[in-house]
Amino acid sequence: MIRSAKRGRPVKRQRGQFMTPTALAERLVGELVLEPGMRVLEPSFGKGSFLLPLIERLVAVRRGSARARFERVMTECLYGFELDRDFYAEAVAAIEARWGPLPEGHNLRRGDYFRSFPDESFPGYDLVIGNPPFGGTFDAEIEDSLDRRYGNYRDHKLKKETYSFFVAKAIEELAPGGRLRLICSDTFLTIKTMRGLRELLVDSGLVSVEEVGAAFDDTKQPMVVLDLICGPAGDAAWVRGERVSRAAMERTGNFSWGIRAEHLGYFEGPTLGEFVVASGGMTIGRNEWFVRELEPDGTFLEPYDFKRFERPVTLAGELERARLGRLSPRLREKAVDAERRGETRRAVRVAERPSPRRLRFPHPDYRLYNKASSGRLYANPTHVVYWKDEGEAVLTFKRDGPWYLHGVGGKPFFEREGITWQLVAPRINARYLPPGFILDSGAPCAFLREGVPRRELFLILGWLQTDLATDLLKTVINHTRNIQGKDIERLPYPHWASESQRAEAAVLVERLLTEAMNGRGIEEEVGRRLNELFLPATAARAA
Image (cartoon, rainbow, N blue to C red):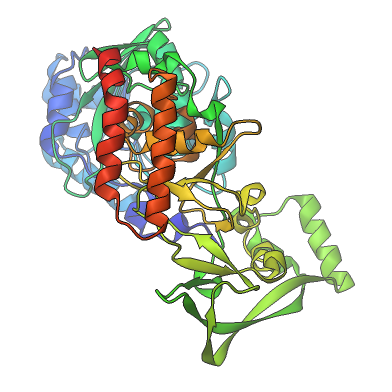
């Protein structure tokens, strides 16, 4: 049965397991004031990095014999969950090696934190601490219900990511005045799909974020310590020691926690989204069947023939194509009926030729394909896609495949003039997109809105070449390596530059494009000239 790529990964990655260094767990526990009556939760305790120092501290603040204190801590104070059977056993063994057998009635559970909810009489946790899974896979049986419960806050997205849902559930279960202290990926600080989480945190009390200050053995992903003291809605977050006000967050368009005082002026005017609309492209699913690399002489090899045929519709086939391998009762009944009637669905068969054909572009059966490139301002086309009869073979293959291939991202913008850039990159590698391209999902694009003069396309392309544009995007809007279409739309339009400067930039970019398309290398000139044009005004504004 077809599953998402996540479900085919090794168990460690499926569960998002990144073990907390012992010294880090001890430090994060040691900085807290723990009291005898506290209810403390570690929602994903792994091998016990946090449990051991928690027990040590909680036992120390109680009276009585060592055994009696331990038993009361384990039955009255400390709660925990761990999904992994081996990790659970290892944690319990470590505890028992230090304090003896766990008492009956202890609250360490082997199971999924998301399948457990305290009853209504439970007063809430005074402290939730730990290192929740990052990038893990949800239990398919409860995935959709979790998304309905935690995937949205005030009509803003909480990305369906294990650590973000752990945070949301833990906040839900905190007692008034309770504290959340979790290690998590720093990705939530700026990205659009975590806006809901950022708003939830600010609305839930006093929130702060600090660097972890320690290295993890099994990931290079930057990690932070997220602290929340539950209380009235706040008007700021403290991020790495600096206060970021709610008003400043609101200016960014995505409630970013990356904005700083020196950025505020840039966000006083319009954004690029008022001039362009961004779009992703199409995911084919089997590029090797339909996409060909162009040789320097404009030729390419075609190793396949494509033939249409009718595939019988069956319940088994529909389940294989369905999300999570499940169908609603209505769709299941429809599939059973179609199978009984002998209905078919158009499909495409890809057959390898005895020997590849060498073809030359332009060719009536192929279109240019916008693959990702690190080139800036302009890059020569590198690929074509089989597009006979307006892409019927590709689109038929997608419709006949699993659910996540059925959509055709960016279709309204196919073959339009625009701007494109590398999806994954440390800076904005933006380049001109001539008319005639079919769009690939790995290279997002932006296109002028109706009524916007064509000159703005070249102005915006020039602005995206500057170090300042990259700095604003990577600091404020989305500090991760991804550069999504909506990130570009949220970038400030260079309103601080005068009309004459903007006109000069547009003319310069058109000239440089003409030279680049005629084969002249301009990479160095792009950065120097455009930075010179925009920086004097922006430097004055920032000062």
